[in-house]
Picture 1 (cartoon, rainbow, N blue to C red):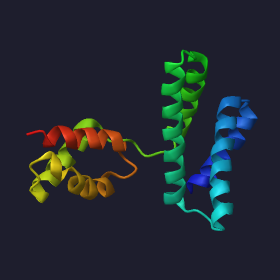
Picture 2: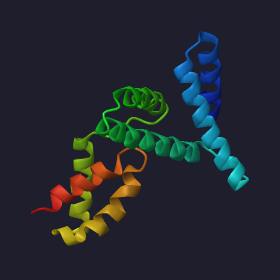
Picture 3: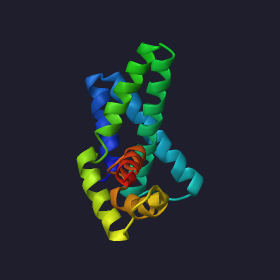
Picture 4: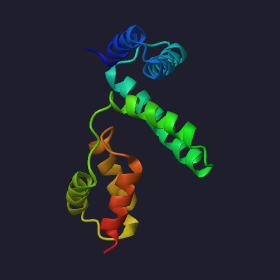
Length: 148
């Protein structure tokens, strides 16, 4: 089943069961998808929908950090609940160890040996982990590995 169809089905289920938080989160996701489709006058496939969900998850992570810094724990908890729902529709994220293995192999393949090579390594590595690893995690791992 396509991700959009899964979102619609799950939203209907949430409406039937009275799960307001899930219903509202799924409505927001479907609205974001619809907005991109209308703006681009196109129909999105699963890969495009996944990109939108990833952006939405990133927005929630940033909001959580800001709310916690401002001492607004109730709002941070709400954003955390939304993030959990969004992440359930995304592929499993790679662990730091998995990213380190792929990064080490990429560094070896490129013959990179100094922090100056970080751009080349990131350029080759990011397409391999796109959608499965957070960009800041990948950047941290590469930076650590290149600190020889």
